[in-house]
Each structure stands twice: as C-alpha cells, then as structure tokens.
Image (tube, rainbow, N blue to C red; front, side):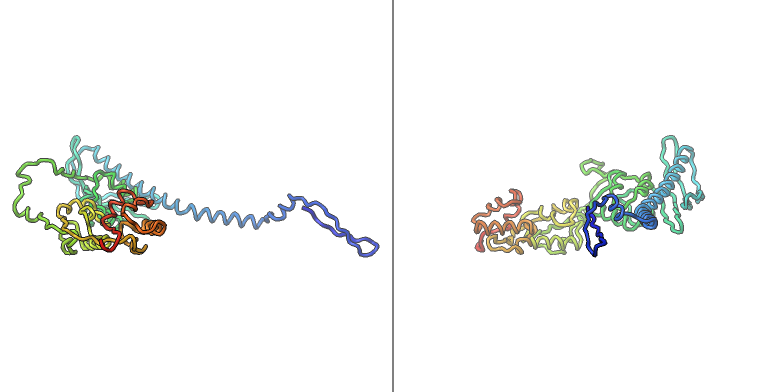
Length: 365
C-alpha cells in the first residue's frame, strides 16, 4: 500500500508527487475499530440471541424435572405400602404434599383395595392431580391392558386426546402390545408419562390357536358357527357392499380396494388385494380365505403406442418406469417381444413378472 502526498515550492505553484508506504496494521485498525458504544451494542445483541436459544430448553427441562420428581414421590409411597406387608382397605384417604418449585402433587380420594401377603400382589386404584401454576392435569391410576382399553379408559389415565387417537388407531389396524416396553414406541407419549403408567400395565397373554383346550370350554354351537360364516367375495366383480361384509373392512377400505383394482385393470391374484393402501396385513389374512377369483379379462396397455401419461397412471409402472420405457422405444424402435423390457434399467425379473399380465404389443391381443 502506498500514499501520495502533494508539496508546493516557493517559486510558484508547482506540485510534486511523493509516494510513501502505508502501515497495514494501522489500515486494519482504521477499518475494524469499534467504539465503546459499538462494543456494548454487540454484547447486548449476543446476550439476547443466547437467551432466545437457551430459554426454551431450560424451561422444558425444568418442567420435565418437576414431573419426574412427582413420579418418584408416587413410586416411593407405593414402595412404603408394599414394605409394610399389611392388609388395609381405607376409603377416601386424602394426602397433602409439599409444594416444590411451583409444582404440587395432591392425590384426591385415593382408594386401595386388595390383599398383600408374603410375596402377594396388591391391586388398587388411585386418583392423582398435578398442579403447575394455574393449570391442572387430572388422571387416575389403575391396572390396565393397553390392548383392550377404550378411549374413556385412556382418558381416565390422563393422556391427551391426540396420543389416545394414535394408540387406538394402532390397535384397530392390528397392532398389539406384547410387553410393557412397547408403549415407548407410541409417538407423543412422553417419557414421564410412560414412567408413570408402566407399573400399572398388565398385558394378558394372547391365546395360541394351536393350544388344545378342554371340550367344555370351547364347545361350538350351530348358532356360533352361523355367526362366523363369511360369504365369499369375487375380487374382480364385487362392489363396495360385498367388501364391507367382510370383517375388518369398512367403507373407506372397500372404496380403496375397488379404486386399486380399477387402476390396475383387474386382479390376477388374490394376493394383490393385500397390496391395497392402508389394508393391515392382519385383516388381509383374516379375509383371504373368503376371497375368490373368477375368470376375468385384464385391461392391458399397448407399450408400443402408450404415452407417458398412460404408463405412469398404472400402479406397477408409475413415472419412474414410464420415462425409461418411452426412451428405450424411441431409441430402439417398437418392442417385438415383451421380455425386451428386462433390458431397461429398473425392471428386474420379479418386476417384469408383476407387469407382464397388464402389457401387450399390439391392439389385436
């Protein structure tokens, strides 16, 4: 860096340019120098930004600690009762807790019933109430099976409506809780809620259909046999009414099955019904024995004349295969055999066998 200066002589007005070096350190200080007010403003801005980032996490952690402390107090109370080893049936016992950090645990009308002897099990129900500020969330603790509990039961336990809906939807689609830890996989169920409910979970064993039982316990009557009889359904001819008559099939699923059948151009296998969107595998296995397929002419697509729009509308082709098929046809000419499709990237042997019943080379087929 250089600096130019101008000097004037006494013999008139004559200018002389003189080039002098400039100190880089001084230049940097001139451009990056902050006054005292500037530095104070920068520190204030940084402090505000850190507060905005950290405040939500601190508040959430503080709330979780309060809920966890409440659960610990409840578990300690249960442990003391079990260690006593005595039999009691008090009614409407009321306890008052100490207020800690803005939270208070106040069991109301807590009732215990049952026997507790050496190695025995105590059964009981209790009402609990957690108050934080002016908001209160109520719930009742009792032994329950998550596979059989209805909406009102989950509400009594104090869960939110959204979480209850997720659990009931999981069970209605064929889901099953096989152990207590499975509850942790439910989206929306907080860890503190799981810790509170886990000691009260009692999952009944699923009966094994192969297990032989006494004749008197499972004696079938003609009336019971008639109730479980399922009328056969033709997968290519039946309407929504016939599909709804099957167990586990409602109006929405019936409409989806028929829409899937129309987009395909008909079913060539009973197993294709199980590919219907949102049809649980457990429901499909239940109705599969009632499904039959009569002779049916599938609607086929001429791959030598079909457009991209026609190809991508088929559920087995979609856009991911429609473009490569058209590109191959434009580069190599019309298809002479259907097995030429295997040469196209993305079409495996299994995919080809799935597609070939719906394809043809000319309109005469």
